[in-house]
Image 1: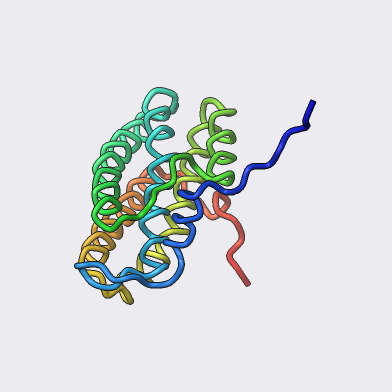
Image 2: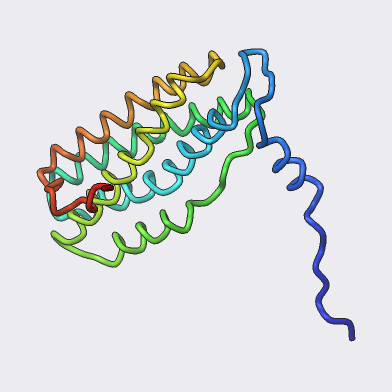
Length: 182
């Protein structure tokens, strides 16, 4: 019999990849690659943070972590609705599963219990929020798209609030963060 054959990239995937290159016009102004990157990364954040926050509402050992998780889950639910609506209007294809890095964070959190669960959960969520904060600021300062500008402000408010919530647990000590870049 014939061995397995490799099929070419489906036309839809090729078209989606081409749509992600450069800036394209929309009725709300130009939509840059950086604008689309923010939209996709906010969706990626919700894909892993919503289920982990829901898990932490049940599994966290500290009441404060359970309460913070409830608020983060609810706010990500709202933010995810906003990002899906924005992506539909701007014809941006959204990711459907967390990145490998995010899946590794999820596994690390899930593998722990008690206080170690709380500390690990807060560490990875706080790190993730810090990573996207720079991109939000870049997009807010450079986008020419009115919908993306409004969304970047919503995302900025949510991320800042989540950082404050996570820090309110008392678990964001210097030891809970990676070494800063040189």
